[in-house]
Image (tube, rainbow, N blue to C red; front, side):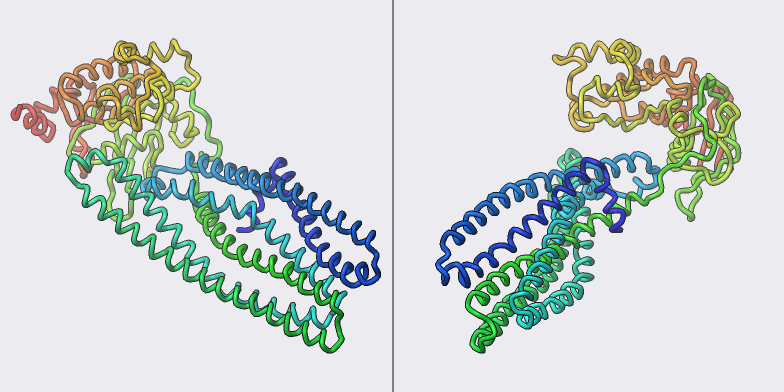
Length: 573
């Protein structure tokens, strides 16, 4: 764990700042060791011997030392924090890039708000540890070792008495370390849950208001917020035990030094100047102990966040099979051969599914909800992996292709359109980031959205709001269609692309979809059967598998499941 943490200090720029920071910290620690010795010499030598010129010289030297210390502390404070932010930024970049490569299953099992908490809150504490941790630990060790060596030169027996308290402090710190680790980890988990609740409630605020669910949402928030408070109380109790115990020992140390020093002075084993220097060094001795106490707390807070960071980083990413190649010049022949898939061991969603789609043909998937239509579509771009069987494109197993090139050749238009916060132009261009303005405009025209965009005051620079909230469902859908036009894939998946729209908007969108489907291998998932009458083949998929195949007229004449579904829709109209 520590070794992996240290890896983030290795980039040249960070490494340079870290080395200079540690060097500055070392010099600052050494500077702090000068004051008691100069004080001792003034009391023991310069004042009794009336060597005022030497005294003034050393006082000036001390002032210069403090000026040097001022500059060094500025570097430590500013650039040390800059280093921490750089490490935090690199960690955030790594985890974000890692998230992009994780399979759909990971996001099925983890809440968005919890992941956001790990990326933001956890890394903030890691940043503080990255800066202050090594620095505080290093300064403390230099101060403790330096103080002990100098105190030993003054009076070795008294130095041993003072430092005999250190093992007790270490014992208390180690005793409470495990308890602190557990409570800090529990706190981080509950912070993630609170963030997830907030993110979920804000995203669904319109639904909440529509159903007057304010009280219920507050109740859910209060429940998680209460858990967070309880977790923090536990953490603060452990911290209180640690601070109170260590503070008491430090206070007791003052009494010990005064008592032992007074006895030594009374016995003539130490003179007044040495006794004064001893007391000053005790101040220097206490500061690193306080830093060590703070370091233990900071370490537990930061390392618990790093453990959660590592948990995500250790999650296996999507990996292409050995020898996988990019796919080019795709015709679009698509075959499913004995494909079986389940989300868990208890229930198979797809069992022994086989069918073929010729290049350029359109196949519609219909059937009751839960039959696996959307799941089947998700298997083609390998959002999920088949358990058995094979899916091939142009007679080559899709596992022989790199995922990136495979997905570049597949366009998806879904019922639930997601628009990124930004402009209309940016949202269309995510279909092909290297597209020219002319290509973006042409894609919008083919999706029948260009004229609407141009009617807006800001045109293509219009901000869509979070998740496209400022646009209607039909407008968002046409933007998503424009994305796919821009992408120009060989295989097209239309997953309930018009089911959430009114009839008038559906007809407009349907025209765009027909244009989009022309010349492409197309799979259409639809509940509104009127939209797929012209499909080359219709497959009826239920939880029992493929029950029927054929075109619209053939399936109606059979009088089976499709005919029943079709007639039920139009009899009720």
